[in-house]
Structure formats: structure tokens, C-alpha cells
Image (cartoon, rainbow, N blue to C red; front, top):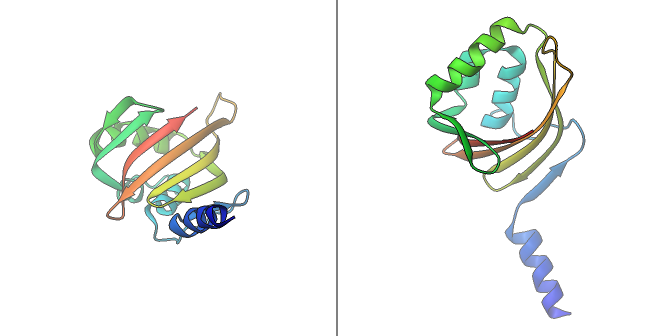
Amino acid sequence: MKNRLLFLFIFWGGFQLTTFAQGDAQLPENHPVAKQLKAYNERNIEAFLACYSPEVEVYGFPNQLYYKGLDKMRQNYEPMFKNTPKLHCHLVNRITLGNKVIDRERVTGIEGRDELHAIAIYEVVDNLIVKVYFIM
């Protein structure tokens, strides 16, 4: 019994695991993951990029490097923001653990495509997103 209580104390007290209900974006509004989602939905490339480290790495889960750096990120997102006026990322669910944020997302408004479902895993260091892993 003592071992079970110790486990529960360590698990719930030692880790800060938070799960939010569907659509609930309970991160503080100044958290980089919350800010980048807001900027994405506003299609504001400068505010979006400001949430990321200059050396950001973006992966296909688990370890396929798509690109590295803000210049490449700008090349990928700027045209999409300009050419997709109905683009919107709906937050379905969010889990946080330490400096990791896991978002289940539903993206709509991409012309000629059905909605896109994805999981994004963000790693935050010094208030900037340093790595992103996408599961499609």
C-alpha cells in the first residue's frame, strides 16, 4: 500500500500533466504554443515566426527532419497564409507535460482538400518553440 501511495505521489506531484477538454486552449495567452496557434489562425507570418527559435527543427514523427530554421519555416508558411484566406486550425485537445505541449488539431479551409487531422508535439525552451513533431 505504501508503494502505491508513493507512486501516486511521485506521478501526480512530480510531473505536471494537464489534459484539457475538447477545444480548450488553457495555456496562458503568452505561451509560445498558444501564441503561434493564434498567429496561424490570423495568418500573421511575423507573429507566427516570433514564437519559434531561429534554429527550430520540424519533424515528421518520429525522426524525419522536414526542415530546420526560420527561413525554411517562412518559405513553407508564408505562401499558405497569403493564399488560403479560410485557413483555420481548430484545437481538438491539448496535453502538457513540462516543456512539451501535444495538440490534436483539425485544419480546415485548404481549398480542394478535406479537413486535415494532425497531432503536433511542441518542445519549448526559453519561451520559444525549438522542435515540432507532426503525426498525420
